[in-house]
Image (cartoon, rainbow, N blue to C red; front, top):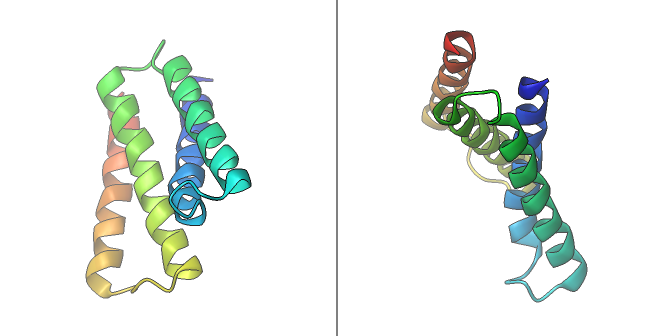
Length: 104
């Protein structure tokens, strides 16, 4: 159950990171409310996950999910470059996340 909570926390982290782009510097009320809500939900779920997972592992996996998801969505939503180097770095982050899960 803790891994499910952590995965959901990571997905909400992607949501708030992408949401920041849409807030217009927190000048758009709806986007701001949705982004801040995603931040709170992400933190609450992370807090619940660390009750039974090592905090170092949980934090690294949480940020890894957020990083990979945000970069991938940014490529599609904001036309950010998808260079071989960037994709290779994403692959290394995914390998690190998998390694931490299996080591926990």
